[in-house]
Length: 577
Image (tube, rainbow, N blue to C red; front, side):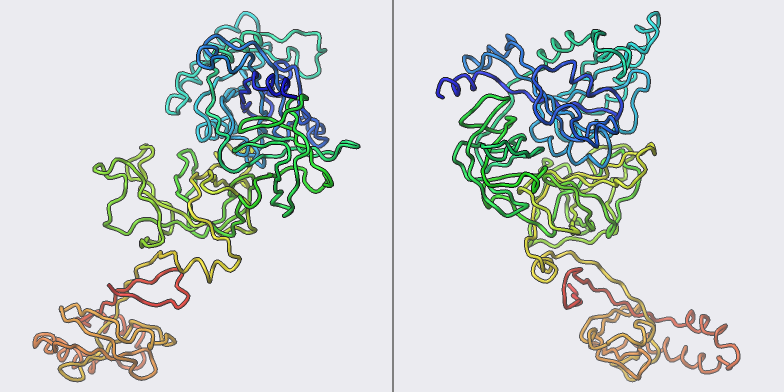
């Protein structure tokens, strides 16, 4: 065994995400590149066969000699390099799988149909690439469809266009290479040699580096297939997103709330005793029905949290056309799940310095429950058109329609997946990082009141008349049915400058009494007495509706009530600073 595990440390696994529009030819490219295919690879899924479209994070791999630049940096550690191709599905309902595989992707290959160029999904792939990966190469596929004599110029033209598209992303100046993975198309006999693929392998080797792999922390493994082997047990295949795994470890399947012991581990059909972040593995456990878990996650027992709601940092994705409105529903991809959630946006109180002010070196001010935050009807975009990354700092509360299982501090993506897939619009709306989770089912009572998001309210009414030097009667500030008891004791200001306190209701029609502690100013009394005399004269019955606005406009003294209310305060208390 030691011999084998010795051998196993000699292969460096490098994960390449294959992204692209739904029929750009990714699968045939992977097939052309690949020698060993793992169970999930190459459209094995029956649904996928029918549609001729990849439905899962298909994995396949091929091994090459370790390139020289890695020999220098890796020393004696490795003697060969294994490329694991992660074929990321193109269609929208599966954006989740792409993000699912994103934590461990070391390099992106974006496959573009040389005839069609950049399509909606291609743009979305780019965005997901930007969120998850530092490096990319672009492959112009299907060059066999271009007439021989125009091939060169068409490829050059498309390369220029792609560089233009990429110039504002982190992938500007990334290499572009032209290939024909399956000359003659999917129906052509397999005798046709792919073109440009060996050059592509050389380019891939050039792009490799030693990925940062961390065996520390809790185990999190994304499982994409589950099947039983007679006499052995149930094998779960997938990729370790974080942490490490060894034979005899206990793992939890959080979706089913069960724990299992690891009986054996395989990597690309070779037994292994341990595996760590970035490795593609098969894990065998006993007494577990594979039908219960087609895909999902397994983890260190107790390490994942089940959240009913969460607070995240939020950044709008520039290409998204719609507004991001509070109370709207979005598809939220978090951990390995995509679930609908109601989103509420909030930010720093007006006047408090946000982190994008120049004197602070762009460190985000950390979110905490002791601070007060300001309610927003929608996500706020920085006024400067076309600026990136300088929207005011803001957060969002996500309230999930069903609880989600995820690691702490993970990437969150919000999208509108119900937008028509053929509409030429980006469906990814915002991204952020999970900061706080609410694990209690009754979080609305137990958790949300701690979240101090407030709205400011301004109400305006009129002084109806003076009762004495210290008291006036007001109207039009409240509806008839308002419970005035809630407002007793709140401060108000008159437009003439005096401040007063609401003492209680007056009569049944929503009028109220205000006590002016300092007493009314003589000019205010004069003003009010002269108008109430005028008012007595007007107002013949038949035309009150015509007259009322006039009476109102001649009313010179208005009453202003300002207060704030915390959105999640169960008592709906009004607070004045």
